[in-house]
Image (cartoon, rainbow, N blue to C red; front, side, top):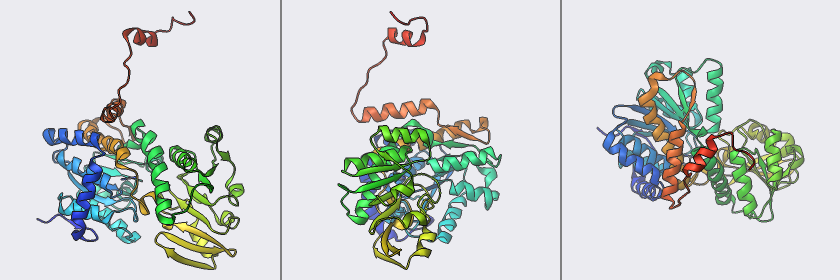
Length: 420
Ligand code: ADE
């Protein structure tokens, strides 16, 4: 039977396969897991509905889940992040059902999520919790089948914790984002590099000498600020958390409210996870030619409807660049306010997604073995798995570290020894 799908064009499959194989070269930890999964089949007969960015790195994860015996289907976790050739290759070359087309409208986006749900998942794999949300609101018919879910991103974990606190969560979820081998690296170095990559591919602007305003100094904001500084920008950080703001100051950045930063910035990047961080009142103060974009999960960080409504002119002037004339000044919005790193570039490099998706694969195995013991709440990936991924990654990078001597172990476990 042909593999079920709704993708742009299966003729793109050969190009997609070559790209998937290229990414796989930088995902050695996932490869080790895949080789073990092939032999042990820990996911045999397990249905997995994955709602993730459809990229070459995600392809590596889907192929690994299938190697482990899972029946896995994939839909997009963002309407603009799909790589159409990757989607085609997953269907045609690897026999994995995919429902995703870059640029799909909201209706098709949710239709695709529902097609993934139609496999009757035992495990859900989300990036932003749209799949879990759909299951809890419109597809409750499919909930009783689910053992547990996994969640990839900060925004999704925040949503799921809110659901658990309200007693609304109907199955347990593993917060993959909270693993150290995920957010220390993917959120910081991945978002840092891929966001600047997206801005550069869309605009080809010179970062050196520009003032870059980074809204939010969580792990993603730190990465973006660091990389912008590395390219020669003057970096301004906006924050609401006083501790993160002190960190930003001590990391060498100027910290100020958005209202004060608005007239200074040449480029604004939101990475807060919250809504309406850049509003009309800010846009009105911006310089002629200011560029605004978002690298947080949802396209809600910039109040785009208010900006468009106030604009005397709105026009797409290049792929991923929309010009709005507000108060006779030109403001450029990138990638429709969606994740600029995935919409205008290829997302995080495979080298870093290797650890994120190793967490996903091992979390799925953990869920299959342990779901009977879980409550309907949000769990972390066990520290042992996190540490194992770190060791494998380090080894794959050819780096070695010291081991504690027996004397050092004893010292760390004792409280009597102090000043000598
Ligand atoms: N999130 C950020 N970058 C990604 C990538 N390359 N693949 C999947 N999800 C991502």
